[in-house]
Amino acid sequence: MSNAMDMSDVLIKLGIQAENLGTSTGQNFFSNGDLITSFSPVDGAEIAKVKTTTKDDYEKVVATALEAYKTWRLMPAPKRGEIVRQFGNRLRDYKQELGMLVSYEMGKSLQEGLGEVQEMIDICDFAVGLSRQLYGLTMHSERPGHRMYEQWHPLGIVGIISAFNFPVAVWAWNSALAWICGDVCIWKGSEKAPLCAIACQNIWNEIAAENHLPEGISSIVSGDVKVGEMMTLDTRVPLISATGSTRMGRIVGAKVAERFGKSLLELGGNNAIIVTENADLKMTIIGAVFGAVGTAGQRCTSTRRLIIHESVYNEVKEKLVAAYGQIRIGNPLDSNNHVGPLIDTMAVDTYLKAIEKAKAEGANFVVEGGVVTGEGYESGCYVKPCIAEVKDSSLEIVQHETFAPILYIMKYKELDEAIAMQNGVVQGLSSAIMTTNMREAERFLSCEGSDCGIANVNIGTSGAEIGGAFGGEKETGGGRESGSDAWRNYMRRQTNTINYSTSLPLAQGIKFDL
Image (cartoon, rainbow, N blue to C red; front, side, top):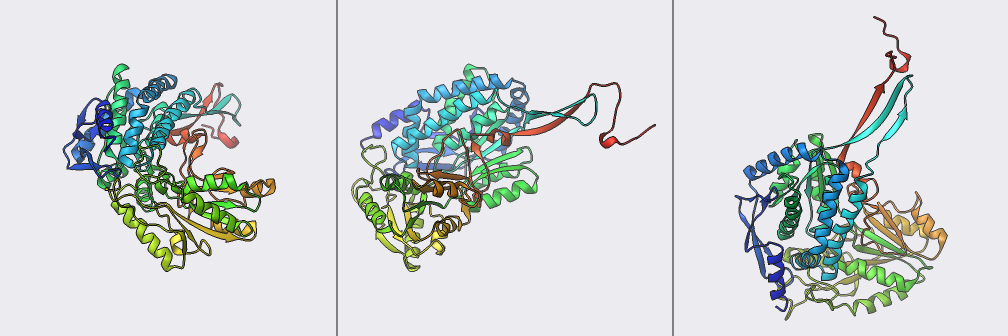
C-alpha cells in the first residue's frame, strides 16, 4: 500500500512496537494477559499486537493510582492546569502522527483523524482556563455570626471506557477535566483500536517524566468487556465515564449504581434533521450528507433521519441522490476520498442486515447500499452510503441505531408533526432544524421542541464543540462531557458552615439548653 512506509514511520514515532504491553501506570508498562491483534480496516493489514490486562495487572494499576492521587490532589489546581497545558502542546507536536494512526486504525478520513486530535488540544486549552475557575458559592446563614459556603473536591480515580469511533478524543475530554479537578484516570480504550491508547499514554509519559510526576496519574488497561467490568464493579473507582452502545450503558449504569458509584454515560444517538419549507437547501444538503456519511456513519451524532416538508421533499431527494453520486469511497488516508471503511466485517454484516430489514419493512432505497469490492477494498470493510425512503419514523429499523451510513428520509406536513417524529425515538442525543424562519427555529429550541441534549439551527447533527456540554437525554444516558460545567461530574460537592461567634445557636431556632 502507498502509505505503508509512512505508517511504519508513524508507529515508530508514537512508540508502537510489533508487540505492546497494554497495561501502564506511566513509564511502567506490564501485561500478562492474552494477545489481541489490531487490524486496519483500511487495508486489512495487521498493525501490531497488544497484550491484555489481567486481574493482577489491574490491581497493580489501581494501587498505583490510589498512591498517585494522594499527592496529585494536593497540587494546586492551576499547577495541574500547567501540566495539562504542556500535554496539549505536546499533542500539537504529535498531531500529524496521532491523526494518521487514528485514521489507519479506526478508518476515519485523515482530515477527521487530525480533527479528533485537534479536539484533544482544544479540551486541554479549555481545561487550563478551567483550572482557575473551580468555583463554589458563598451563602448567607440563618444563624448570626455564621457563614456558609460550598466547595468542590476531587473524587479520586476516574475510570474511562471509550469506544472505537473516537478512540482518542473522548479520553481527552474526560482526562483533561479530571486531571485539573485533582483526579487520576484509568482508561480502557476500545479493543478495536488499542494502539491509539498506547500512543496517547506514550505522549503523556513524556510530560510526566519532564515534570517528575508520580506513576498512576494516567493509566491504561487493555482488553474486552471483562477488563471494563473490573473497573465497573470496583468501589475504589467512584466515577465511571462510559461511551458506547445503549446496551452497554444499561449494564454499566446498573452495576455502578448498585455500589452507589457515579456514572457518566454517553450512549446511542438516532439523530434527525428537520428540513422545513423555509430551509436553505444548499446548506441543508451539505449538512445532511456530511452528517450521514462522515466517519462512514459511525459517529454517535451521525444523521440517521431526514424529516422533510412535503413541499420541498422531491427537490431535497433529488439533490441528495446527486450528492451521493459524487461520494468517493476509499483509503481514508487519501484526502481525495470522502468515506473510508467501517471498523470491521462484523459492522459490515450489521449494515447489510439493516438494509434487508428496512426493505422487508417497506423502505424504498433511492440510493442502493452494498459492499464495495475490488482493488483497494481488500479489507472487506468498505460499504456504500445509502438512502431509504420510509413512510415515518415508527418502523422498527428506523427506531434502531445502525452504526453505518444508512440515511432514512420521510415527509411531514406540519411542524408539530415533524417535531413529534424527531422526538419519537428512544435516543435523545443530537438534532437539527434547517430553516430561515425565526418562529420555526425558536419553536424547535423551546421546551416543546427537540427533546435532545443538542439542538442545532442551520447546522447538521454531527460534531461537537468543546465549549458546550456534550451529551444527550433518554437512552443516550444523560451524561455531559467536555464543556460548560461538565467539570462538576469529576468532583464532589461539600457544604461548609463556619461559626465565628461566641455562641452556638441551633438551626431553625431550636433550643437545647444543658
